[in-house]
Image 1 (cartoon, one colour):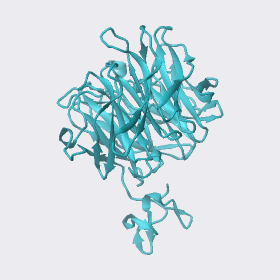
Image 2 (cartoon, helix red, strand yellow):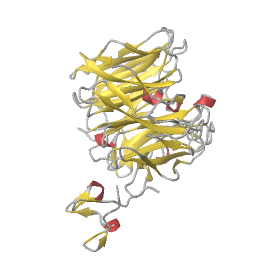
Image 3 (cartoon, rainbow, N blue to C red):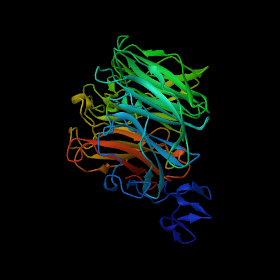
Length: 475
């Protein structure tokens, strides 16, 4: 937004908190002039406690053992946040905790084990179905003779308003084969809000490592019963790094995936509860990798202001003027019905259109498996993109940081330098996030994130934090 309004009745805009009961963050225009707030982008620290008021992990985290694949959801009926994770303190079984937020304190109920028979959990997808008012938790464990029940599964819950569960459904099997599977961490699944159907992505190692999409949905709310759809192959390569995001405008999910050295995307609609995909569209810039999703966050998000999907990739080609090897870039695409259209980048040797470059944040999966990742979050209240990554490709010593990025429909404006999120010893892994458009004001302008630290003196500690993208001029 342009900073066109300087004062109101002689008072500096930066000093005005409300006008007629409207907070400054909610004011768009004043006498047809755009209203510019004054909140800088910032990291917000949350403390966590149990229902007795006792701090959990000294008030800085909610688990002291590695909690891989964290994901977050919000129940607008009870104003509660739900975090799903692999509980390293309990044989890595899939687990949820339900919490309430007051200021910057989150009070959690007890841990709720989703399945005691599925240890080795590495990924979760936590989704709130507003159609049936039920929580749907997707979780994954790879095959191993040491793990009791490996595969991809889902379970639904009816929550109460006291950080607990009234009804738990039976476990639904999405995919289970002794040859194993692979998924894309925090890009495992996404719900389509208009019908409450969850789309789930996975690699089938019994079928030449081809990639599939399947669905799960609540078909009996009173018993929390789930029905699994029919699997549909969307890619026949062995790359299991995906991106997935939902457009409430098109009422479609879009799936992003590398096919050889080409980045492709398909739109997903639901026919009788099953996933039906459109034709794959190809990005015109080659050598784009989504390996940020290995231990990162979401590879793609949806921008409700401009009806655009934004996606994060690493350029893996030879440096050629504007496209630099190993730097990160954000591109965008649109969807109409089931047709995906990528915005054209132009000639990367001379110019790159419809992108923004990030050269000061990294992720390191291409260097090895135990490195931190990167990802995107969309701040609906601030109408800005949050891009988070790491200060280095260090396995155990990187600092988590974020950029805020404005998009005006054709061009990106990026903050000049990233802001710290996590500075303690250890590399942050597996960032889950919550969409603030679903938060009904509970978190205001703050996007909640979750992650755990790998290595260093904080190894295993799991954190919940917040990022406010701000509404001040980006500089």
